[in-house]
Amino acid sequence: MLKSVGFNTVVLDVKPIVGRTIYPSSLTEQLVSWKGISMPKGFDPVKVFRSETTRLGLSFLVSMNAFSEGHSYAWRDKDLPGTQFGSPGWGYDHPELQTVVYSSKQEGEKFQLSSKNQSQVPLMMNPHQPAVQERVLAFVREIVTKYQPDGLLFDDRFRYHGLDADFSQFTRGEFQKHLKQSVKWPDDVFAWTYPTAATVGIRPGRFFDDWLTWRADTLAQFTARVRKEIQRANPPTQFGIYAGSWYGDYAKYGSNYASTALQAGFPFLTRSYQKTGYANNLDILMTGCYYKVGTMYEAMGLDKPIGQTVEAAGDVSNRVARDQCWTYAGIQMVNFTNDLPGFASSLQAAAATTQGVMIFDYSHSFEKFLPTIRRAFSRPAIAPHTINGLLQLVRAKRQSWDKKGFKERAFPILEGAPGTGF
Image 1 (cartoon, helix red, strand yellow):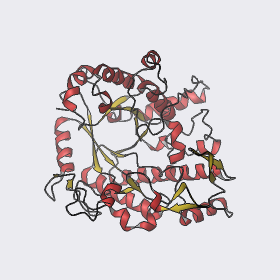
Image 2: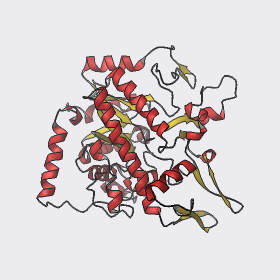
Image 3: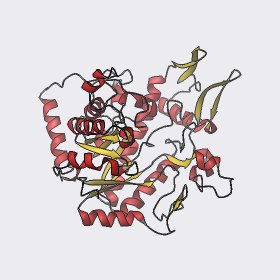
Image 4: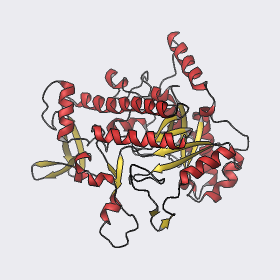
């Protein structure tokens, strides 16, 4: 069906946030049942997808959650008989590797630093821990070697828990090594403040900018390691990530998916932070442009923020990458269940501002959207990531323009909604 309505690429999530894989793995237990839906143990859906996409001439990408190794609902229900979630995940067996959260909730006069303060559904691990990084690399090697997909993507869990992580004593030691001096923990990074009873703010410490940059550099260096692992295992396999589209929100998550040459007015984008961009280590950047309004023109007519549109989100995403990788704007179908014209407008906005459209996801009442998708994709298109050598040509052209001193139009800091596509 997907090919018949115009899609040219399929992305399959093979390692969800619980940390188990949908394929038989030597590294973890296979996920064969979830919320009452099951498949035979030992059955390999990834092998089937690889075979069928090849037969149909579709590009096949696999997606995995890098730094998530558990599901909070599964942990909550772990002692219930017949739980619908199964094992909570590898991360719960390794509390020493979980991320430590600096809680903004006061306990008397003492702030809490604990892995138990995690507030998100995925159980986030500490990206600074060598054992955590090695586990991710092991999955990368296994998946790329076993299935030789056209591309491997990290889902949005290629990040930290938030600005509040990681505040473990291990990370403190590593940060002090980086600075070559001791750190008052955590105040030299930042302190929570309470301007009113209902709001929480932060007071940056003397190493706040160093902290943001060091965390981002950790992930940037890791993308380079991942790329090398993929090239060793299967050189044709491409590498990419999925992230939220509002780049201004991502300094707190430590994931700087921009070009190292990005020039923009974000307050965190110091010269040091700028160097942590890792777009040049990617082939593909998919961003969640998960807004309910397609264009800025429509937003003005509705008296809604123009930055919270698919058009603005796609434009920012594309400008951030700055021709170092292909940028594909993501649309969330469920946002348009009762607004098919809005869905059509959003598809057009995504295609106009980036090099492709990612639609999330197949399980969201897909049949209802088929007529619109058929019209939008009626003209066959070739995914740019499938054209050998094209990205290198685009990068070279950008480099040529930079050397000649060509100036880009002003960067559009059109403020989006925090957490969009998160």
